[in-house]
Figure: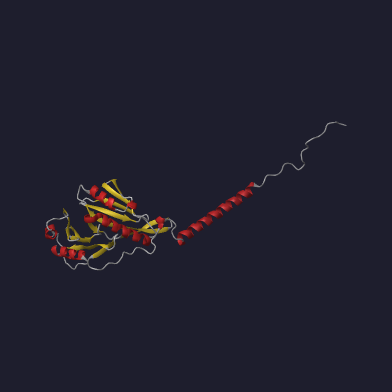
Length: 286
């Protein structure tokens, strides 16, 4: 009989079998795919049905009043240099998200800035704008440029043109359309309409030519107003015909562009070879 003692005999059943890894992988892949489908459905539903949740996605109808008020502020800041309110321009077809179309609204203010004075004119406007706009003037590709923030992600910029003017632009960027932008109606005749009629007659153009009235709310109440008449056909007109209305003291005389003041109204004329465009403007008090 042997005296050896057997210790640690191996189990007859062998080591425990590992968990079936393939089964877990299948469940993980299935759960991941299902979660991706749920996320896609939630995203699509949110884009389709939910209101915007960030400020820059507020719709065009919500941004429109901000733009109009910004134009009024620019008009007041421009003071005596104010030349013209441009009509609202809406460009559609941009993309707010990959699944949602949008549109952008732009409005313009044109200001007198004789060559060499552009930086001073822009700096003066920047100083008179609301402090929370954080307006500033710096170098740009074509000379000095103004940049400001009118609030609600509405941007303001200003750049010189080549003919003694500066163009100030208020821009919403691409936004959901919502119910769309509708400019405030204005039909009452003011001094700008009288000045426009006088300029048309001086240029031997029909004084009853259809005109467009563009407005913006002034910060202190009332409206800035531009009466425009464009596409008046006929032979090229001469600025000499407008000189008596200007009192021989024009604000701008750079053919084909001519501007003068008569009472509270500034008249801007662009005398093309085939058509004449006129704009008569009353701005906002400073």
